[in-house]
Image (tube, rainbow, N blue to C red; front, side, top):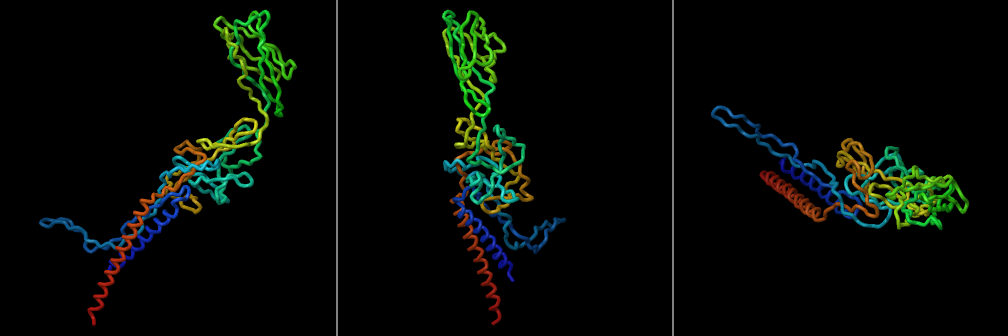
Amino acid sequence: MLRSLFSGISGLRAHQTMLDVTGNNIANVNTTGFKASQSQFQDTLSQVLTNAGGGQDGVGGTNPAQVGLGVRVAGITTNFQQGAAQLTNRSTDMMISGDGFFMVRKGSEQFYTRAGAFDFDATGQLVTPDGGLVQGWAADDAGAIDTNGTLTDMRLPIATLMGAAGTTSATFEGNLPADATVTPATILNREVDVYDADGTMHSLSLAFTKTGTGWTVAATQDGAPVGTSLNLAFGADGKLTTTPAVLDAGVVDVQLGTITGYAGLSTVEALSQNGRAAGTLQSFTINADGTLLGSFSNGLKQALGRVSLATFTNPAGLEKAGGSLYRTTVNSGDPQVGEAGTGGRGDLTGGALEMSNVDLSAEFTNLIIAQRGFQANSRVITTSDELLQELVNLKR
């Protein structure tokens, strides 16, 4: 039987595989986070007709004579080149700009994906379209995130609360006018809202009274005096000389250390206080490091969690598991888990998705190449068949 017949058959099989790969790429041209595949061919075992011969005195060496026995698919590799960005303006959509994979749990198995089209289910869990649970680190009640802790399902229930916190410290800054009158005494009143541990708001008032040696500060809360007064003295250069410049206002320590005493300026105001009322979650945004930052009804923002990313030494070694998911293999290496923007991992962009990286112009070219390769190999089979027919016709 002619060897060319089997070589042609192997060519048909190989180009059929190439056609299958190309067709799948084209079919997924609009699949979020899809990575195109490429088929690679290699020749099969070659039959030796004549072995190589070494040169001797008066005789040159000879090369081996071999006849190839066809082609086979050497491998189908995945191209992890970055896809283009598609702006969706959906707060739960995420795109990885750079290397890395989102981590998704389905049952007891861990998967990885580049498709960031996520949403919340009825229990507030961040999920993929087919119900996979997105993995990350949850924040504690104070908004702190331990990225060395155990991964958990990302969850953001609508009923998320920011607990109240009592005010223990307040800060005032600005300038007290050195040229203010002593008689009658100049009095500057300033207020700041402070909170009890249960979130009840109170008005803390500070009265700055000009004296012959500087200023005296006293505090009242809701009209009732609290704490003890404090005398503030300034040097000739207008800088505060009283240390420590901390006013005792009951449970609140008022920091006054940055106040100055220059002439002509009356700018002293409350800068900040560390208490807050309780608040409910209103909305959230996603930072470049994957942090879910919640905006609460009390006007404050606090971290709610952080999405984790995984990288691999050999991402091409991952196995496609369907649903735009990948699973690890012995040749992909173990996942290196961390936060976005660190360790070679890409940044995260909220409100956008990564489009398929399929290049239609290249895929249609591959389609033509596969078609012509298939036709050429079928011609080899036809020609071999004609030769066999001639051989059979020798006996009539």
